[in-house]
Amino acid sequence: MTAAEKRPVLVATEADDITADMVITELSRGSVPVVRLNPADIGVDLTVSARFGTCPAPVTGQVRTPSRITDLAQLRAVYWRRPVWPTFQHLGDDDARFAAAQVRYGFGGTLYALDSALWVNHPLRNAAADYKPAQLAIAHTLGLTVPPTLVTNDPDEARGFIADHGQVIHKTLRWTPYERDGVPVTGWAEPVTAAEIDDSVRVAPHLFQARVDKVADVRVLVVGRRVFAVRIDSGLLDWRKDYSALSYTVVDLPDRLGRTLLTYLDHFGLASGSFDLAVDRAGDYWWLELNPNGQWGWLEENTGLKMAAAFADLLTRGDGP
Image 1 (tube, helix red, strand yellow):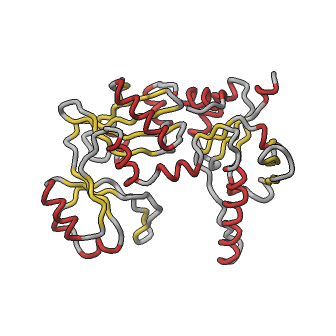
Image 2: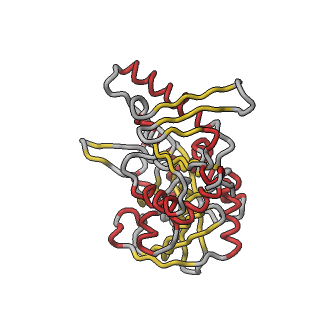
């Protein structure tokens, strides 16, 4: 094995991540060294030491786990999947907030400084691409068909938008853990009427969108320059509500649409992303949103598409889009 082939791939994710396991399995088949870690393990099970300004390289150092000692400068790629940051519940509130910040900006900042490795995807680029208003604006700029959308905390604006467009749905601008009376609540895309709009809308911006008269959804996973498109038939407004009701068909996107989605990722500097589109009765595609780090493992299981192998290939090459 050459020196280049010995360079490891770092996989940052939570302890139980079946999707990451799929990619690691493919990397192992190619004899690619892998170091897996989770920031929540900082301390006994995870140690970082990094030096700056003392050698020609911008950053040198190591990360150490119970099974690996990895030279940061030798990483060929970083797969930033679903890492969990520590909360330090054994500390008091002030100490826990302080320690958590030091981990994010110390350990996280050290990894973020590794610009010689391919990131899939860099967390700061993921964050920049995760704002729905920015997504909508870029999609429109690139010529994608965007449903009329309003972001507002003005109840009168919301009522007027609903009056103008008739069938309107409400979406959350950002998923966050939420409980009501101890029961987890998920923010699905839901129909909304003008009568439901009250003064509580003023508390925070809300996203209202004209409902697309769709016949199906399409989830598009892009890995490097490879495009995987799966049509999802369900009859549901939000197909995530009932996975047992879904059926899947592998489809080919129109060439221009596929190229535009690649350009979209290039705009944000992303090596991968999961797009949600809707198909109307005329067969036209409508932009809905991008999840820079979306789930895809269940799609491979249901379609046989070699998505994990595509990730492994991209991480093995260690090159950008």
